[in-house]
Image (cartoon, rainbow, N blue to C red):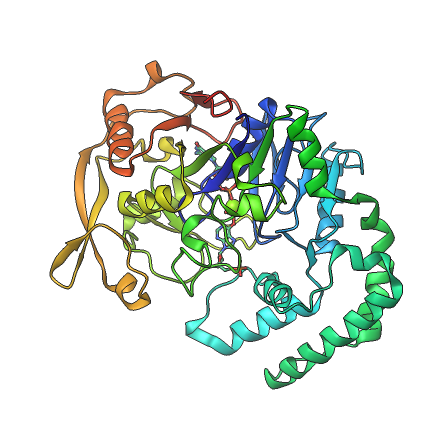
Length: 430
Ligand code: GDP
Ligand code: IMO
Ligand code: MG
């Protein structure tokens, strides 16, 4: 089976964009299957930096099809702005290179308004969302009132849906003490944007089925990470979609049997942006060092990411809930200067050592990491392109991670640059 699903195995920002870009040379099509423009995926090719939020990370490779599946929530204005921005970097997006599912739900201006108003009201208890309207848009989808891509093609349906949607949300906005939106204005905005996005619309499940039968290689690109999954993550401090590998099937319209290998992108330490539990978080100078060396600032919101030690309990849990067959370990170079490193190998909770992160939010806050200490390698791995270039202590650290998380390393990344990547085993050939 020559398809590969890429997912984040921690709290997002593991380097999915870099790895998807690298792998896309071996694929025919790259498919986003959940999330929206809350994602921020960075690609660096010959020094040129591309920041993608909605467009799949295969777009910079000529001749590859990009697909936005039905599981994604699409903000049409954000999409057009991204197409424009990436166009200025010389990447031309056309209806021949980008296909958007007709049954994808849209993010309308009311969604970020509700998202922000709710967060403001929560004060200290806020989730720390990206403010992009992701949660409210998924709620509308599940509540069966969402405006979808296909509705843009039917003026009558669109009008009725927008009116009903705003009737619902305006009551909520009033309750939240926020400004309401004028349905006529939103409708006019949608009518203006419709002819610009409709040319990209198509029947994604059918296209992917055709490609699968023609023996084409499909690469699925996840956003966020398993610990932000609405079922398996640190609920309620999660995003509003399923981010785990199984969603590649439901979010694209392919059967689960077609998914192939599951590659979990895994940072050699841990980061998280936004609120919520983080057992191995470092609020000391080592945390600062990781943040500075790793340039840990959000792509979408510019927020500083929280940093901490590698958490093997959490990643092993992620390996299991995703069905990860191999990991791509990224940002090993960020650890180069450390005298010693720690890996979390268990949690102390109520006088016992446990081997999983419990679902109870209070327990997630209370668990204390049990650490194993490793000697640092104190030399540069930055830009290394073969195992032979890695210091012995670095190899030992990687091997220990493999053992603890119960999954092998398939790829190793040593800088933001596309080609600073070590291939251990090709997921398309496994
Ligand atoms: P994504 O959301 O998973 O695609 O990851 P982001 O792009 O949000 O964050 C990952 C950051 O790390 C980006 O700035 C990448 O350019 C950078 N990056 C990826 N791999 C490596 C690596 O191996 N070493 C270093 N130093 N940076 C990396
Ligand atoms: P990529 O794909 C890291 C976090 C937000 C917040 C929570 C909910 O770049 O890895 P939302 O706006 O989705 O309702 O916010 O999820 N979050 C991410 N954190 N990387 C991401 O995407 C994220 N997308 C959302 O910070 O804590
Ligand atoms: Mg990111």
